[in-house]
Image (cartoon, rainbow, N blue to C red; front, side, top):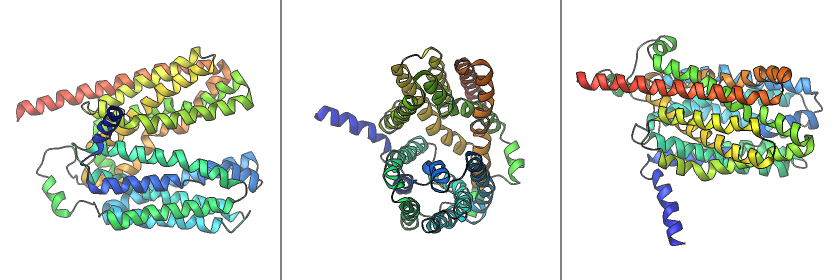
Length: 421
């Protein structure tokens, strides 16, 4: 038993010595994610409680997705000019407050519009949150920091929907109040224990004299982004990754339904998502520890290979255990990608534009999430569900190859700079 304890503690040694603010952001994310009650049950609420049709529900879902975009642009701009902490507190606080009236409005049509407003405010808070993490970390501790924060989100998500499931039927109002309360508690942690991280004018001016990827830049968002061709290339390839990854929530449910029937398939898919959550919670620390010496872009390339194997093997899936094994493999790819993508972006983002970069880059890298189901849906409709997996395999391998090429390009560039110095 003592040997097992020692090994467990050795894994969590990875998270020792991180900036103090990271630990409080970790607890804030656990609490905030634990209280993410509303959106997992939004479809049920709009159709069951409010009696909206599937088409009307889809309309509100589109609005929810779209309204986060202007919120993100606004929050990114404001966080670069007025500070990360202020913008997080203001907009995440407004998001929490938007949930409160929903608890008392019953079936009023005001509820969907308040949820849309909450999405707008939440979108505005997100770039400030991401910029803050980049501000308070550096090359020596970023991997561990992003890994810990990712773990915190998933620990919370593993608990939150379960609680919401028990509350939904008879205590729906508590879902809204609980989401608001946990968001406000997480904000209190940030208010009390996390300092403003926006670089000072002095630090920005000093960075102009240093030749590194995070040095401040002068100019607008697009102008500065065009000076970062590696980051643009990364975003384009990451779009392929998101196209592949979204198949876990689109093509896999269709296949288990096709194989096992709607009722059994839905239960099996729920088990797969539980497997995904458990792998994330129990393997993130271990995977971070064993890949810590690899550069972020190498880990992201490796994640593409894991996704290719995990999704590609579903071409041959006829029994449920294959789906479980597949889920474990592509979840390892998810861990490698999520914990390293933020690090790569932070390492290549000028400190003067972190908020704005973190408002636009998720839109570019996540474009595959938006278009993946629609494009793959047309392919499946014409050629069958199993056609999805060779396509997904090839795309994942292409993405991994280009990520590795990007790694080689940057490596040669660094070697050339070192020789000149």
